[in-house]
Image (tube, rainbow, N blue to C red; front, side, top):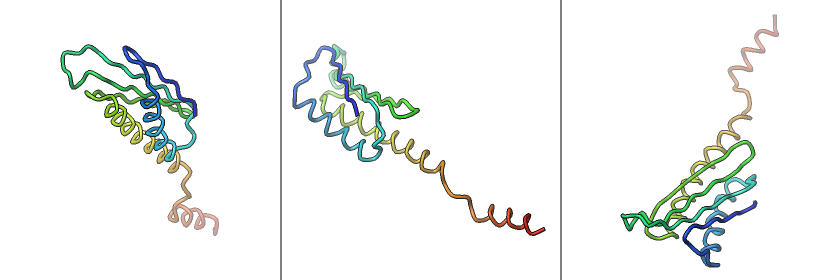
Length: 118
């Protein structure tokens, strides 16, 4: 997994980077086929103080691109919210991949067998 961090009006501190990596490790537990994650951390001069800091996460998985954005007055909370949104999306992708290869239902097998007995 490759992690790329972009920042705008902000210096990425080691503690901020560690926090982001720890939170993204939770996503990797659910789905380990992640190719690349782009994180964009932004501090805006917004009128509303509580929506001033934002975290944008873009995740590239085989065949899919997922995106989540969160705004908060604390950048750590914004990262947490964005990771939570991304986690829900990755669980949906994993369920679709998992359900795609499900075994044939029993009623379809019995219908096929009745046609073979003729």
